[in-house]
Image 1 (cartoon, rainbow, N blue to C red):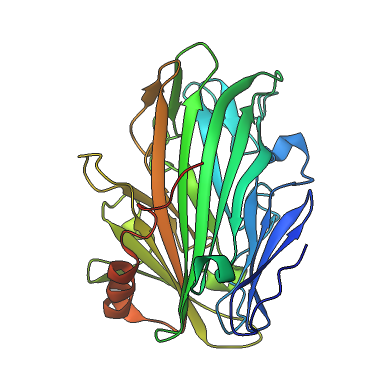
Image 2 (cartoon, helix red, strand yellow):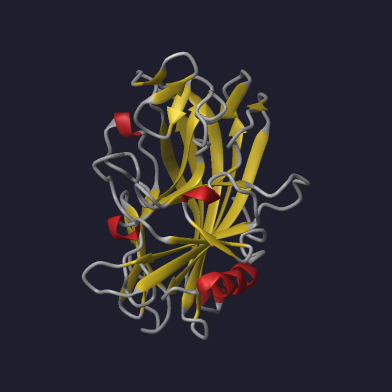
Length: 319
């Protein structure tokens, strides 16, 4: 089903049982694949790819040879009790990485709402979704409520993806959630909303609170972090600005998992160096925004975009 709207507005298309496609001005901004066809080794889960700026520059990577389970932007967790909802091998304190028969899947169970730009009355679309986290044993460990929305800011020449998730332990047992760092591997605290950038973004610039850096920003705390990279073929640059929009936790700013040298990736990582036991019936919730901009905004421009996006995900209604 395609909803017809003015050409300059966001338009969303549901490719039934496969994906949602979002376009603006003839440019596909993202494809949200909710019916992935991945092998179980890759921990199948919904993901956003390709992701593009308003001018059409691609700013995500799909299934790179070095980590075939990396796919655009996806909610991915590597250490969920004995299960792996990230893909590939699991890191163990006593023996390092090992490929086990423990790759779970995050399974789309339905959309509760898909609001078009006409229905919202602005350049904004919003989606509500329900999912199950199915362990390698076939048992459901968590149920998830997810919402995301896309908004265009024509004046800034940017668009923003707001993302919210709340997941509840239905396994009947306590499930600790951590990371390879909590298992003893330094600076490997990945897990959460994870972005993998294009190959040409390797060696990009990381901006955070007025600072510019690279791999040394790994594990730093802050409310936002931006990554600027350069494009092959077309030339020019693009910037992605990530904000932690999780309200009312009373905790320190999130630690960021970020790499620039070997490849480009960013993840606000709430389990970076802390194991969080989730009791039966308990829920955890997180909210983030990602703003996509053409050009290298520099640290000042990135901060302005982060401030403009702040709060966008905090108001998303979860189904």
